[in-house]
Length: 478
Image (cartoon, rainbow, N blue to C red; front, side, top):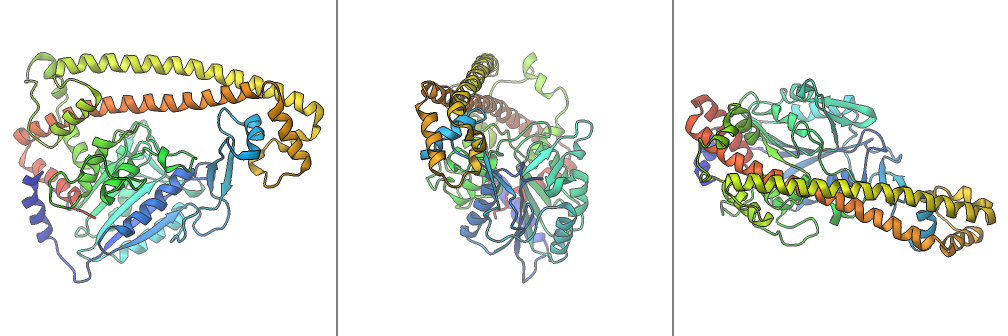
């Protein structure tokens, strides 16, 4: 990575500067309806906002979330099954192992507006008009995205009130930014990879980081509020910049790969590739450029013995070796292909078996709930009014008696057992999905190492300049 330092510094020194040069951050997040605005999205925006305030440097934040400062409920939060006296009632009416949801107003203390498309675009255009030479802009989106199968430029960011912005429309918005203002973006939604097309911009001044490809869903839209469960790209990327995990623990590996004492956005991205135990398969705009540059036959060379097995000496090789060691995978191409095929088949077989067990658990759970409800309702006809325990704020004597009757039913212990087994099964399925993505990441890192090598020896001068500008943009810090 050090070999790019001089190039990065040269580009930065050539950029026009202003005495009042300043950094701006737009945090845009939420759902398009209260149902789609899960608590994890809200917690991501809140955490990133607080984290950025602790990192040295002057920057101005703008937060745009859901319906802005409207006091109406706009966030969906999962209710825990285990809730002291209410637990039997919640278990009796739970959907699978989920005890229901409550809706509330977001907990972000100060927002600059909502994300409904028309109002948001007006706000952002006003912000763009105030940018000056030497300023920098960082855009972070935490929310939902959708895929256009016919045209990736039609992939969308979903905004409040079921409005949206697709790749073309966002590009039109960014075209208003002066070419001498660097724009960096972090998009964490499903199908985010299509937004790599926003780079490199009219003067090579745009770059970014995407949680997923243009055709894969991303992790990070849970309704739970336990940050210890979060494994999305946001969690790893910004932990690297902060120097601590989301739970304020030391990082498992040092993200400062070049040892200069600072963590660039690019190094934060590489940390997410190394340390992320996630279902996400992230990429940067410079990596997407390398991938699109490759000829169609590039990955076939190894199959026909047209290249050696040794990986080249660049930043991606040690990352692949590190992950290969962690996953107990060989580095040799032929051996690793066999191992990956076998490991994937084993994981997919386990997933299919688990899905069968989950269907059995769900069928048994529903039968038990029906049986217990019928028995309790015969003695307590008022049970029906308690069918949505997530809305219950107080318990009178009759409600307490109903809860006691549920807990004393002869099949209640079995209900608890089946429900807990279903919850464990869901966690196991997610763990398998994450393990499959780590196998894909190992393979991708090896490919990136070879793509980088091939590019350095065969790319045209124009392509080298474009790629160099992307890297220079990505390797800046906050």
